[in-house]
Length: 391
View 1 (tube, one colour):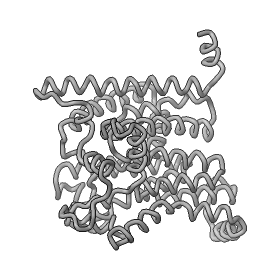
View 2 (cartoon, one colour):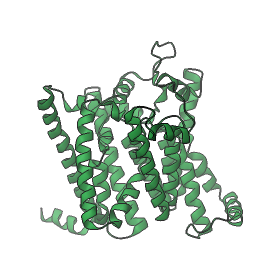
View 3 (tube, one colour):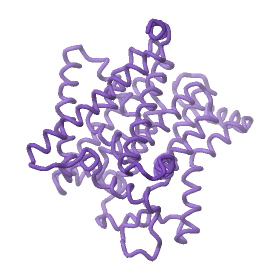
View 4 (cartoon, helix red, strand yellow):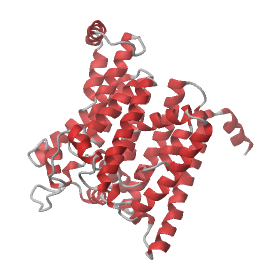
C-alpha cells in the first residue's frame, strides 16, 4: 500500500490514469442510475445494453456477427456505408472470448477503452502544447466522458475509436512525429471516411513547422518555400500519402466485393433522397425552419460549432480548427442530419470548448457546466427512448 502511495505521489501518469478512471466510472454509474429511472418511469425492464445501443448500433452489431451484406441482399440500406476498422477490432475481441461475450457488450467495451485512451492522450496533448501539469486539463476528459452527447462514446458506434485515432494523430503531430501521425490518420480513415481529411491538418502542422512563423501572414513566397522544403523530405510526403490509406483499402475491398469502389457513398441514397444546395442551402433551410424542427436545432447547433472553430483559430489551434471546419462542411453538403454526433466525434471541438470555459469567469464556467450536466441528462433520456432528435 505504501509503495502504491509513493507511485501515486511521484508518477504523474499513474495519478492521471486513476483520476480518469474515477471520472469514467462515475459517468457510467450515472448511466446505470438513469437506466433504472427510465425503466421505472416508462414501465419497462430494458437492459443497459439495449438502451445504450440505438439506431446504427444495431447495424454495427449485425456487422460484427455477420460481416457486410452481399450485393444480392434485398435490403436497400446495405451496410457498405459503414467503414470496417471498428467492426474488425470488435470481431477480434469477440473471438478472444470464443464468441461467448454478447456482441453489444463487446462493442461497448471496445468503445469505452478507446475513449479512455483518447481522453488520456488529449490531456497529454494539452500538457505538451500549452504547458502545465496534466491535472490542469481534467475538464476535457470530464466533457468527453459525461458532457452532452458523450453517450455515443459508450455505445456500439465508431465515434470513440475515431476520436482515439484523431487524438493520437494530433499528439504525434505536436511532437513532430509526422510518420506516426500519418499512420494514425490511416487508421482513422479506415474507421470513418472523414478521417481522410486529417491530411489537411497534417499539411497545416508541417507548414507551421517548416515555415516556423507561428501561423503569421501566409504569403505566396512562404507557400513556395514550404513546397520546396517538402520535396526534400520524402518521409513527410509519405506521411501525407498515408492519411487516406485506410479508406483506399476499404474502397479496394468494395471493388472486389460488390464491383463499386464508391459503394459506401452511392448506397447512402437509400437513407434520404432530399437534396439542397450544399452547405449554404442546407443551413438556410434548416435554420429558417423550412424542414423538421429537429433539423432547425441541428442547423443552429452547426452555426454555434463554427463559432467555436473560429475561436480556436483565434487561439492558434490552426490544424485542429481546419480539420473541424472541413469535417463539418462535408456532411453539410447534403443535410444537417447527425451533425451533433459528427461534431463530438471530431474530437477537436473539445479543445475549443475547453478554451472557452477557461476564458470566462468561474461563476459563468460553473453555470455552463451545470447546463451541460442537465443537457446530458435530458439527451441521455432521449437516447434511451430512441428519440429521432438524436438520429
